Amino acid sequence: MRRLDIYAFVISTLDYGESDLIVSLFSYDHGKIRAIAKGAKRSKHRFVNCLEPFSLIKATVILPKTQGLCMLESACLKKSFSTIPLNPVGFTHACLAGELLELWTKPMDPNQNIFDLYLWILDRIGNSDPEHYARFNLFFQTKILAMSGYSPDWDKCLICATQNKKLHVPLLGLASGDCRICQNHIEPKVSVGTLKTLANVIRWSPKQLMRLNVIRNTLIEGWSIMVELNTRHLGKYPKSYNVLKSLDTTISSAIYNPKKRYSNNIT
Image (tube, helix red, strand yellow):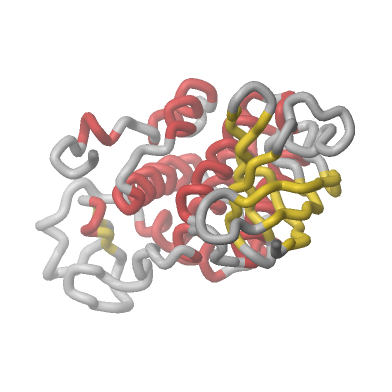
């Protein structure tokens, strides 16, 4: 049997039988791992306080001989973001980040930049005022999309490839600016400031992003674009968006059910 000692975030858990849990982990060195924790619901020692969402743990997992789930042999808590569940809005923002992390990553495909990004968003939600949650989550969604290889090139018109013009996002049915070739063909338009902001989010480190202020219009437009891109590329609508729509009034108008708008494209 091959054992791995890992540092990993608990993304989600699922009841399995009367006493077991299936745990979805995202580790620093090995990416996403799904493991079964035998007796976790009854254990008072091996997994106590370790398998709550948003926990950073040190764990030992046993790899399967062929295919299937790993086995979570042991775990100990290294860092807990225990304040996040106390705030419904912050909790839902963190759930959305975790859901996107799980949807965008593949098993045993390490991405240490995504690991660090997830640590950053949990730290920001756990230690910031609620008024900043939507801004930080916009940064998270923009960067994880880019790290997954699905971000548009925000620096040129995607219709005619003209650079140094005001920007367009035709993939979304959105455009901005005065490109003579494209300006009359795409509706509705979004502001140039929003697209430049998203371009900067990709370039800048999380530490630099702490200094990036975002006006309300840019925040709403940015969220609209991220909801659209995540939904189209994933081929599904992340469930946390619906919950967040009812809780965070700052960006609720930017979150919609794409099945109603794009019934021919989204299944």
